Length: 99
Image (cartoon, rainbow, N blue to C red):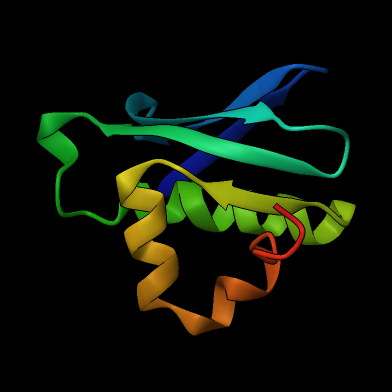
């Protein structure tokens, strides 16, 4: 079971994934104004590759954005690719006209 913890401040934040109490991955973001944030980096520990850790952190970011009325700019290649593959989470993406 993957547990994702979120920490956030006025400038940036992250989503950290844990499996059995061990850190499995990290996704970082930076605020771009008050209404949107940029996912700039995703890393998964080698031992946990292929176990859905990155996707769980991204889904936590999507959930956070939805609950707080925020939008996401995915600059990280992993986040960008995952958004392109999954239409059901694209509602939180920044509209290109707004960017």
